[in-house]
Image (cartoon, rainbow, N blue to C red; front, side):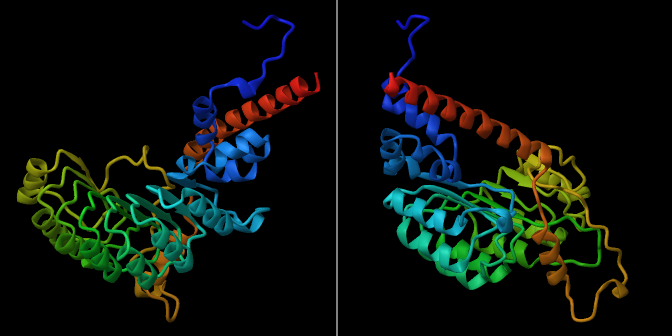
Length: 320
């Protein structure tokens, strides 16, 4: 047991404990800070087991960063040595990056894309063809159409969870069941489905209930074209264990859920701009709720302080 006058050698911590601490930082913090503390930590950070899950969560202020998230992500994927199971890409995703990930992560089970406007239908479709073991997919605030969703559904037969989220908009005449029908026709094994802010109607909802018989969780918040009532509501209540309705609270939703009330007049449209263009613009500025992000940052800050303290203590121990 250490006496009051002794300085603990933090390198004597079991490697699995150290790895567990470092793992909680996320990919950006590991590559930017943790691996530079000492050679032992660097070796731990190079272990492929540290990169089975890659979380590239960030604020989206890419222009104000001293590092290149895309290059960091490529490096993290390389370190996984083909064992990557889960990856989160936010704001900086491209077709090229997605292709790189899919070619080197054949056993990927969970893919999350947030505000990645440089990922096209073609790029996502090509990646889906190489990810037959995908079980969870989130596409939030990206410009992806039904064509890509159909390819995903046909290529990823094990898909159990799908999140396809947009900015909520009170413009009732803007209706589209395209995505809902693509989901209903190609994703029969879904258990969980989130369609936040989607433009589907009752027709699209009926198709989903018909085409996804195993569905247990359905989030329809801010899907203002859906009118639950009568037989449709009864069917949802009988089929779905956990149902989120269009006007339900968004307090637990990760992103800013402010509703875009853009009116209903054709004069609202600038010349040559369509609903899809407006949807893309709204999603491009989408951000997290400050409270949720502050909590995440606080946890990272606590771990970062711990790392700094360990590094200083270790340096003092070496000098002694």
